[in-house]
Every structure is written in structure tokens, then in C-alpha cells.
Image (cartoon, rainbow, N blue to C red):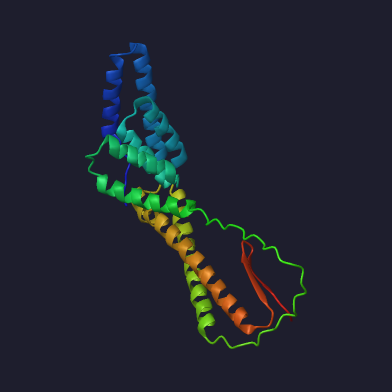
Amino acid sequence: MRLQLRSAATLACVSLFVSAVASAQDAAGANAAHEEAAAAFHAGEAAYAAGRFPEALSYFERAYELTEEPDVLYNLATLQDRLRRDADALASYRAYLEAVPDTDARANIEARIRVLEEAIAAHEEPAPLVEPTPEPDEPDVIAPPPVRAEPSDPGAGPWALVGVGAAAAVAGGVLLGVMAGDLSTVENASGVPWADVRDAYDRVPILSTVGFVALGVGVAVVAVGVVWVVAASGDGSEVAVGPGGIQWRGRF
């Protein structure tokens, strides 16, 4: 997706806004607000051109606070998006579309909103709640010795799962590595024309989402394959899958 800061039209709108304010406020106060808003906007443009994106964001936030001009809000959304402040960018994009519903950038902004919604949902989805199973009240009895199951050959099925899962995990790691490289390129693009880093910027959210999904699915599939092999062996081994990884306990 290709989004750019807006400047010339915004400066004109800032001047119009301040002129309207001047008719209802003290002239000195209006002039001071105009000067501060214009200075903040120009400073934000300069910081953006130099690749100092957090600094540019703070200047545009101040300009928007003074003017509430939609085009300044558009610039805020673009910078928040670039800095991976997904929730803030999503709110700013939506507010901009409400303020300027007939904008010529509507299709691009709506596409970016969908990407941000998916990214936020992927990071905020809660883990399922597992209710503990109450222990039944049973009389004290002497349990018979466990009967050890005879080992069986699980065949090639579990090893195929392990192979597929490992491949998916490796692919996810590669995608995340490429994403990290693109993100570094964008964040260190000081003095580099935006056109030279635009493609890297557009790839970051896609590679991040696909990479994390592939890595998670790969690890889960490997765990299933390992559990299958251990369960079929019948040698008393146990597999525990938890936050610390896969633990194998048994007799050797």
C-alpha cells in the first residue's frame, strides 16, 4: 500500500482554520496559534524528510491539536502506521475517513485498515480458558500394578508430521528474518527517498503475520508428531509440551 504525507493542501487548510478562529478569538491569541501550528507542521515535514519519524509524529500531533485539520490527521495515521503503533494508526485512519469520506485515497486507506485489524487481532487473541477438572471422591484402594503396553511401530506417519512441521517452522523463521531486514531498512532510511524503501515498508506487516503463523503451526505439528511416536513406543516415556518447549521423560 502506498500512502504519503500531505503538505501543500494541509498548509492552506491550516491557514483557513486559523482565520476562522481569529474571528472568534483575540487576534493576538489567534496569531500565536497560527504561528505555533505552522511551525510544528513545517518541523514535522523536515523531520519526516530526514527519516526522524518519532520526532515528526510529535510535531504533527501538536499541529493537529491546534488545528484539528483532517489532512494533519492523515499524516498522523501514516506515521503511526510506519512506527507500528497499530491501534493508534487504525483509530486515526478511521477518524480521517469519517472527516473526509470522499477522499481519493479511500480505497488504499480501507485496505490498510483491514491489514491493521488482522494484525491487532492476531496479537490480542486470548488463549482458551481451561477449567480444572475436580478430583472425584474415591475410597482408598490399592491400585494394581500398571500393565506395560507392548511397543508398536507407528510407521512413517509421525515422522512425516515432524518433517512437515520442521519445514513450516523454518519457513516461518526465514520470513521473520526477511521482515526484520525490511523493518531495519525502513527504520534506518534517514536521507533515503521514500520510493526506495516503500516496497520494504509494505512487506513488513504481511511477512510478520505469515511468519509468526508458519512458525507456530510448524512447532505445533512437530509436537504432535513427537507425541505420536512416544505414545506408540509403549516404553513408559512421557512427553510434556509447555512454554519451555518439549520435554521427554522416560526410562533409559
